[in-house]
Image (cartoon, rainbow, N blue to C red):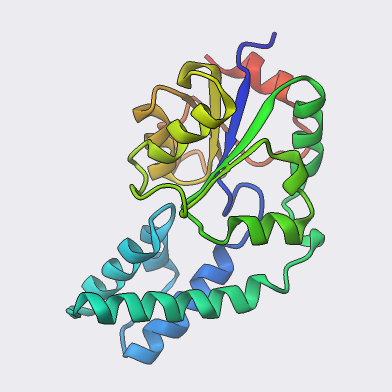
Length: 218
């Protein structure tokens, strides 16, 4: 049943719910700047780089800033975010993730992370799953935000496989689009209405294995 060789995973919302901490950090920053920002606005930031996210917030507030001011605010947001994720522990890994990754490795798949987050190594360490990854491609290695496929193409390259030999696991529409732009099949994690472009959508990893994923992919 094995059709693929490499598995590429987004981080936030796929392996761990750090999205809530991104929201808290952006909300704190927006409040400080006097910009209204809510959970609906936050949906626009999913899968988007830090600077692009801040530019969306400025757009919501009808504000402009110099590049230096933008960079300072992005750094401030990251400091807030890191203060939260540095307290993460294994209990915050999403249900079924560790079992899914472990089983896939046992079946001979190579596994890579493909995330815009520059804090990916810290998060994987806190969750104690870093040893399950053969490659980590994060915001320190790529410059183009999803839906550009750069992060996944680099992940496939670091695993030593062609894009067609890899499956991407994503919770954001921009990530699904990035996978397809890179010539890869994409499994959406979460809401089928939001992820309707995915080749397959599952609610999460609990009770499912890689063989079932392979069988259900078109």
